[in-house]
Image (cartoon, rainbow, N blue to C red):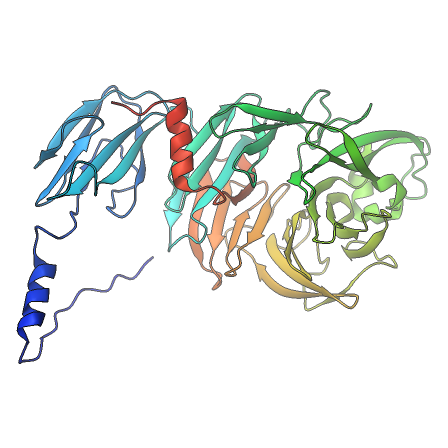
Length: 488
């Protein structure tokens, strides 16, 4: 909780100059002071704060709105008239529609110095959530897309601000997964049809404008190469990285398990152009030994998902960081040759890094969301699935054949993470974490204290939660208003 300091008075020493008295009088003048409005509406969330401009209201018909603009100020609701004193109006709102409330001080032309507040109507089937604020949010805008683990149901991808207010959303059926805002301000996702990896033919990633217009579809290339739902990233060359799970038959898995003629799934990484042409491909079949599946192989069923790729990151020199869940390891892949340059975690190989400063017995456990933090550092969401350790967000410095643990975050309320998840560290040291397979998303500051906690309904989880501040909040508002014009 924030600690609020009470105001205090201070005596001004005598003698005061005339100029100081004049300045004091001007600052204290109510006619020139900025108005401090109050806005009320049934179900308004969160509690009104004159410094914050986005809110939600239930889709009542109509919604009664009351504005008290403050002394020497006027206000209007929607396209209504500017008025002093208490202003009331009932407004009919459709789902997604906003009513704009404006307040301005005295003496200016209409709208010249107006503060605008947006009360947006939240659909009845919007995901249930609770938001707790413990301090000032670090990134300001975030994207999440909670799905129901029990099965694929329609869902919403939405952007929320640092007070937990959804400022943009779009409903999808089948549900969206791996939702993110790209560098050009478009939004990308694919569809989840159930299951741990993508098997549906014809599934693609969709890239859309914030207004909802389809820009392009991107899919994995080649027969028997379905598009997987775990990852899409942009490359420095203006292309895209996609994933697939490609079946391979007749594989002898002895002596690890009793399967001499098994069908396995190979993790496939592809780089494709915006037009969908394949320019590069990597397969785990050529570079990852069966022995690296380690503890997971006896737990798998046919077709055997030996490696389970779930995240890729491009480095500045064009190499790739790759997370393979079923080897409990992260790899750096040489783009030119496809060879493994180093391996972090999992069963030992000649390319394994020496771990320094990490007290967790297995280092990594079914991890997700590997990202480049700096030139020689990487971050990972470490699920620690089916281990004796807690899930965590970690940061390692890779140097001279070693991986030095330099930062980690755990959460006292969580003991396990079965799947999914993300961990993104800001330059100020704060973390945004979706605690994989649970209903919790948190942001923690450099001091490891929560700035906020977002909880969905039990049984729902957001595969990732990632920053969305590449686009200013005004752009999200405008996109929502373009789809459902503001109430007049």
